[in-house]
Length: 322
Image 1: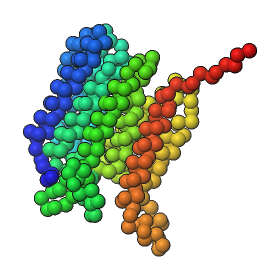
Image 2: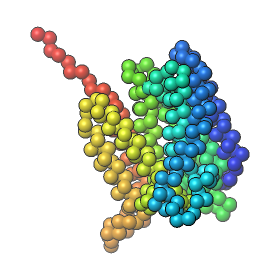
Image 3: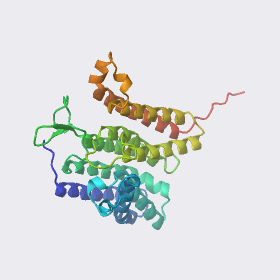
Image 4: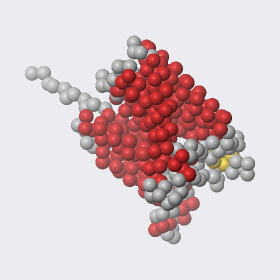
């Protein structure tokens, strides 16, 4: 399938995601005996907050780039490549919490019930990237080993690109199922949302490493994207917060070690570790792309496992009968 630039498809899928997510959230609220109007408020407030938050998130990287060099065209631009997806998600979640406050629903409860509908919205929002040309794809594959739709897309010259947005969409779908299965398994409000967020963020750290950025969307350090940094910061926040609540500290150093490994393989893939490509390392140099991408996926799996472990309460010690 050819890469296309179809704003109608992209916008249509985003609207479909908003409608489907709102309807699903409304259903879940009513099922819990809570005011369904909170879903409508969440959709309205989230839609208002999503764009400015997405723009603010994008401009964070530009503080060290063109923002203060006389180039202000990106400040007001609403092109997809000039918006932060993670920033937009944060804006929408703020809308959900404000809507819950208006309708008398505690933030933790509102976020728990929104976890699955939010993943449904993410699923369709990621599919929307299929109409945004090379946004949501990897760089051109020199030797595509999965050259078939939907895992790869082609441009008009026959170059193949890995469809990372499809992997992101499937991740959101899996997280939706995970969130639904968590219902009723926890007595702490907000924990279902936190577990779902850890899964999404942990996976996204890996997917961000596969994406190409033909536009200016990188952080101050060129080897890492702003979205990846935001994912890592938010992931670390949930892990540290979970460790504080559960009084388990080992997940923190393990998380830092995994993030360090991801940076190493990012350097390796971008040929920034030149000493490793000395004579005798030809095989590694020829297969560095495959090795690094497999490492990214394994690191994401490890991060998700560590994040869930950090949020899992300690088991009560069994007391022996006297």
